Length: 439
Image (tube, rainbow, N blue to C red; front, side):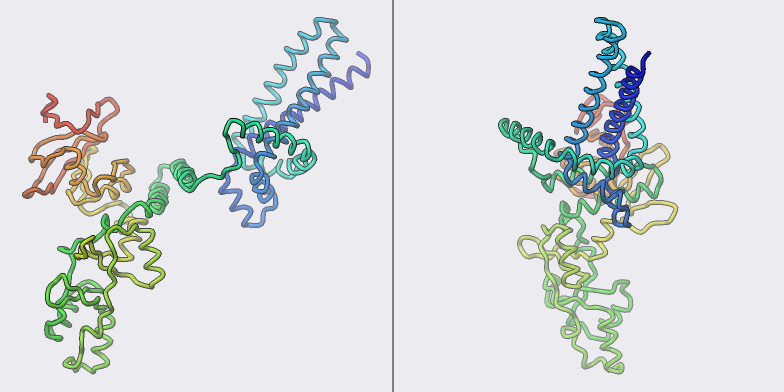
């Protein structure tokens, strides 16, 4: 075999290596973690900054990679065909086709891409500086190809320049959160908090409001000595005060302000005026979403708001802490996640009070019960059953078996929820006894 043939075979090997470089670079740069690259760039990593810069012009990056990859593959095939025709005559074309297909498939596609899949971040940082130079070198040709491609796609009504909308960006972020790997308690809580933050704009104040029947209020017209005594016995910092009727809220009394006024008066409470000490009430509609309310709390430096319905009637109260708990969850024992009104059983079932919110259950157990039509478990059962169930009735819907354990008048007070196994059929909101299944 003469030197010329050896030289051409060496050129083929180098071209196959270059092809593998392009293939692996494409997989690495498209599969690398964008959050990690962003974080590394913030820490001053220049290679990560180069990766992010390449991502900003993805169409030019992909175009340069494909141009380089096709160029070296075609060149290697042409050289191989010439060498094999020289060695084997006309049959050399068949031998060259078979050999180049095998070599390109194994060493220029599968092998580098497999490595890049498992080491995407590391490889992306390594190849980014080289790929940046290649993108610049192939820039004019790549730009012409890009213009032809975009013009052709526009004929079919496809605009590749349109950015992702806010809804698509949110879905992408939710998908990244769901892919947040790990089953440890810490990771699960991180997923819950991130999902809760994204849900703030979709949840209304009415879904987390402390109902008026559970709100402690004080009569502003009661003797000041009695009012101070009541404040000492109430475990709350801020209390709404009313005058005339409980619906007529005239202010929000802060314990610190009251005791400061008491100290200033040197214990002479006769001259204290509750209306002057209390802060003006802040009324908000119950349809306000939590994200807007959180921003309003921050902007006004407030922690407490009175919630009213569309008729202006008091519904209850909402606090900054209520919204923060929607993100971080209720404060619980360090070894056990617990929300009030939920009792897990050993067989996997859960006994739930009717007032427990669907969002709290979804967050604690990572369920996917719908909360569009109802905010509580009792409301969900009523919505699906289309009637007020009797104690002992059993319903099956949304992948759960709901057994009514308690009812007070027309209100469902307790439900036993059992997740259905994979083999069980979710027949919809039909009572099991009506469907022929034992209750």
